[in-house]
Length: 251
Image (cartoon, rainbow, N blue to C red; front, side, top):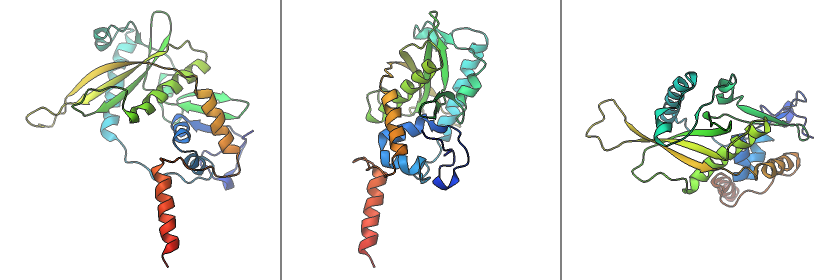
């Protein structure tokens, strides 16, 4: 069993037997590259931080406020009605907690002592009492927005992990989730201190059957004493390998 707290993950900082926290994003890191995952979660060596997407975060915050107005009134958002979605925003006392990055919706795997969690954007509920996971996305493209692009496969897994987490918490969850996409318009004559968006809702049929196996594999990675090999397409590991090779060749 993993009985070490790696919240600030370094082997020299074992301070309690609290569950090992495994976020949705760190599980995605494992799927992307087990070596980077091991270095991050077990040895405390993280990848360089990305720049924050502050504009995307602003869109996210405004969408939450907008849907919360209808949540408080237990009514359908006009956009949901336009897409014939028979549901309303789900009202629950833990909604703010589920949205918070460092708490989110949680599930404790007692056998592995892993606390798996992830922060959702929104939850809708249909007349059958099924929860529908909703994720907000922002972009600016003139191309048709679909979920088929390679980098958007991460979004699908993200939604499926959320579906898995809510099911583990005893909720009835629909396989159908929704992406609310805000697309910045670039066809105006001038900026004029205003950015307009076209907003569309894209349905997605999730399948969380892979999640248990992925969590087990990540657990096995963590308890292994050997650093795992890198994924072949991991740019971070390729960079480290190339840099180390050159450093050894140069005096």
